Length: 312
Image (cartoon, rainbow, N blue to C red; front, side, top):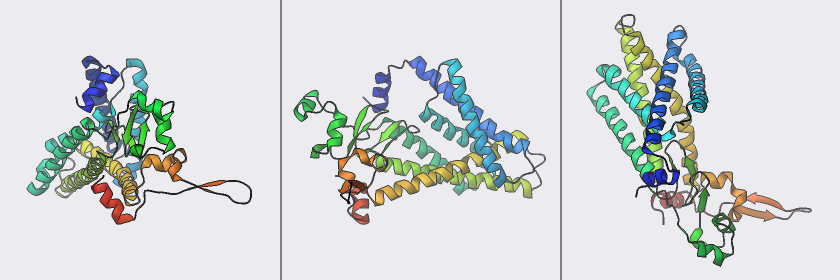
């Protein structure tokens, strides 16, 4: 059984509940994208750069309104489906509006990127991040009240770098973080796929921004800006602003993960290092103990990268 099926079974969500969640996610995508598309309509005189922070605030406000409506309809949107429908929405705007002003090579490139993103989303959502199963007899032998205590004790080599995810209630080897957008934990078995998918989003959204910019420039230079369908043009500008905002935070996120790979440190370990004894180095000054951070897994940048590419 795939991870997606097992999660649905664990949460006991009926097909009707899944369908309702998908409809809410789709509606939230349409609402947020249309809200961002209103920005160039209401503020046509300001530059695209000035529109960027306004579009960001409008998008956040639309998401908050969507979360507020959850209380009335009683159905929550799904983060992975929200990501999926955003990809499909941008792809649709490209195919029906922007494509005619795009070269054949760039057209093949962006279509291939969107298709690969959909494939990557399916793989990371349905894949195993590296879940470690255990039996209750193990806890009795170890003398621990739960598996989290056994993990934090660092006395069992077989549990090296196995961390507990509070969202999935699962124990994952090489656990980095739980990714709501991809609907799964990021661990040893899917960390490389996560990095490839994150890079793919940055590249695809950058390509979309380039295509949409070319479309807008073409409308200006050809003199068809006034005759162009205002809804289509505003949608192109809105989705371009959305793509730029996504690229900004995703690049920062990508840089952090590249740093973590180079120095062999996971996000959870960096944030919660005081929970794990192997990261604590105690020094005794004149009066009291002082705990400092030390990374026992850092073997040098080249070895760390090699270990990421070929984990043991």
